[in-house]
Amino acid sequence: MGWPAALCLGFRFSSFRRTSVILQHLRMSGSAGAAGDVLFGRKGCAGVMTLNRPKFLNTLTFQMVQQMYAQIKKWEQDPETCLIIIKGAGGKAFCAGGDVREISEAAKAKQELCRVFFRKEYALNYAIASCQKPYVALLDGITMGGGVGVSVHGQFRVATEKCLFAMPETRIGLFPDVGGGYFLPRLKGKLGYFLGLTGFRLKGRDVYRAGIATHFVDSEKLPMLEEDLSALKSPSKENIAEVLGTYHAESKIDQDKPFSLEEHMDKINRCFSAKTVEGIMENLQRDGSPFALEQLQVINKMSPTSLKITLRQLTEGASKSLQEVFTMEYRLSQMCMSHHDFHEGIRAVLVDKDQSPKWKPADLKDMTDEELDNYFKPLGSGDLVL
Image: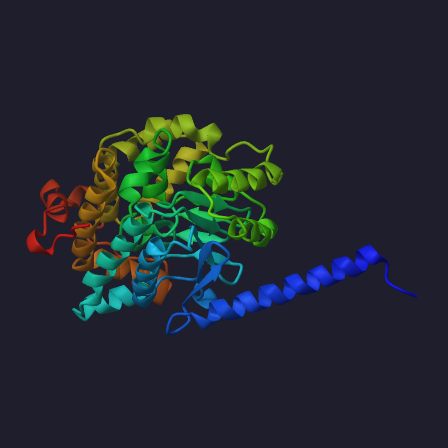
């Protein structure tokens, strides 16, 4: 008995498509970085970057940062490349951040890496922000810290139901860097201040509703979306937006659910509008609702130094250009590398994993204005200039 003609055609087409996909993957893996930690390939009109450290949740190494920067600059000059797509391998994470453990070890050993890593990482983030080609980040899975830096500054950010977004740096004695001082204070109300100070996690469609993602697409549709984007002929930004908009409109996951923080936004705006961290904590205590007291409990576990740095970073960043923010954040990064809390945070969270950091100072009142000012001082010839 013969196959129906339509099924034969469908089978031949799917076989052809499958073969094309396999060949495409082979071509892409052929141009992998030295260690294969980031893969670069061409797919139709698109340059595709795949963060390829799934066992480490695609965290960024210094080598990856260097390779990505060079490739973006190369694609920017290439007339054949009309857009850039970035994604993570493994299905669990887009990118969970920078390899902070490696940076901490280098800083303690007084190695150059702690200076050059942040310098190169922020240069990469700025290259994405100023890229002349449309940049599409597929946020499918964990997106934190450095992963936010290589996505949020691009023109298009596509979240899925698997996206888990957070800037949890105050928990490790750092601050929400990679341009957090620019994009966080520009979110609605005081939402960015809340996210930066507490490290609160946004999930799925909430990442879009918060204004961080530009589109929301079902995770299982991403391969088709990538195919459709790369099949465009010399696309304009409007063409890309149209394709993304179509997929976004088709997604029904959590479509009818409100933003999970909607009911708390009045509290967030009121409590986090204080000019000092102490004022924010007093506001939360005074509010007394379960939500407010829960945030108070969270903030109490964070590095007091990080909290004070972060609030000032966001307050100042609200009126700075992105370039100015990166210069400020580089100063902060270098000060954090030479102080106790960052290394203690890494120890408590990533090394010993006892989740019991011993902060110095342990209390907000012991962090003086003069000490805080020191973190923001220019580095002279050592300043970051983009």
